[in-house]
Image (cartoon, rainbow, N blue to C red; front, side, top):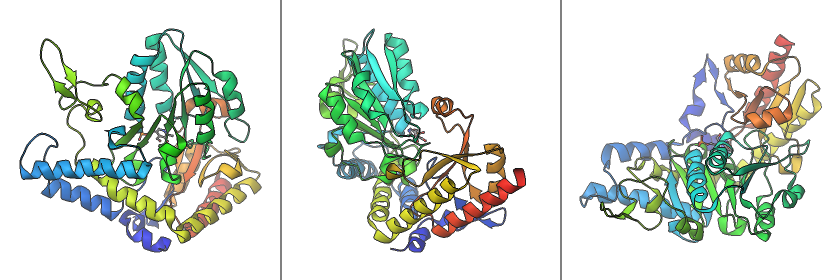
Amino acid sequence: MSVSEIRKQFPILSRTVYGKPLVYLDNAATAQRPLAVTDLAGKLALEENANIHRAVHHLAARATEAYEGARDAVKEFLNAASREEIVFTSGATAAINLVAFSFGEAFVGEGDEIIVSTAEHHSNIVPWQMLCQRKKAVLKVLDIRENGALMVETLEKLISRRTKIVCISHISNVLGLINPVKEIVAKCHAAGVPVLVDGAQGIVHCPVDVQALDCDFYVFSGHKLYAATGTGVLYGKKKWLDAMPPYMGGGEMIASVSFSGTTYAPLPEKFEAGTQHFNGIPTLVPAMEVARAMREDPDVQKEQETILEYVYSKFMADERILLYGTDRQAKIPLFSFAVKGAHHEDLALILDKMGIALRSGQMCAEPLMDRLGVTGLLRASFAPYNTLEEAEYFIKSLDKAINMLV
Ligand SMILES: Cc1ncc(COP(=O)(O)O)c(C=O)c1O
């Protein structure tokens, strides 16, 4: 498959903005959707719309099949040990909140400790802070090096007998570095501590095998992986999910309800209270197929590598630019940077007029911005459907924009 063939599956990529071809480099915020996803979402809404699990009629059976089929597909995609370990949520944030609440209820008490890293998205900080407030527990922070790499060698010192869970991103949405999660999990497990991996970015760029990683929880959002928004996945080892109380109460998460006492459904329904996003969840299936096809295609991978090397070397050679996350071995084509003497918002606005969609600001990682000593950054995040030509246009346009301001 060539990248140009892939692009045909994503019609939005051939639109223009302000009369210029769209160059979409905000993929870490949300990815674009292929036709296979939008066609399925349309078909489910227009031809097979019915609530799942409840009724016996034909449409309900079809909708349930599509929803539960997605669970089987996600189980395969992550190589989970069983389909009971796959819980559908509305996204990575919802999945982390679920674990923070339920795991916290079962296992965290006063004086216990939770470890996150400096480089986490707010979604992998705030739910843990809220838990710590509720339980009078302590949040500890694993720091990063100058090149953005996690200081994994300090983890053992940070872990104590009170540590209940370590929560780490697979790839930071700001630094664009693949963290050594397998090594982190091994270190934590050696100390008897479970690990939650925030895979919101990792699932897009890395093949994920949760059994090989041996992580206890892995979460991601569908919309960053080309699926419908409002979809997400929590993978959890059965032993933990079984031991955790439900997060929300409501329809379908129960075995039996009475005023003398309620019992809960087995996994995974125990964690899926209320009506689920049954028109959206099945779009994970074509989305994962597209993701896998792009990841396994040598031409697409070669173009990604070329883009990574091209932009990385341009940024490292340009004295006006400060790139954050420079550990080249661990780098993915996600570049957060500052330009000396120019405000990130001004540059983003100028580049927008040139057709280039970038992210600017704190990127939901205020503690990391503080750690880096910046108030905000610009971020260009590439997807496998981006071309080298787009990367070249981006670098040329950025140079023009900088010259206008500095
Ligand atoms: C690393 C990381 N974690 C969590 C999230 C939250 O994802 P969502 O807003 O889809 O729940 C994001 C979104 O940018 C992210 O990049």
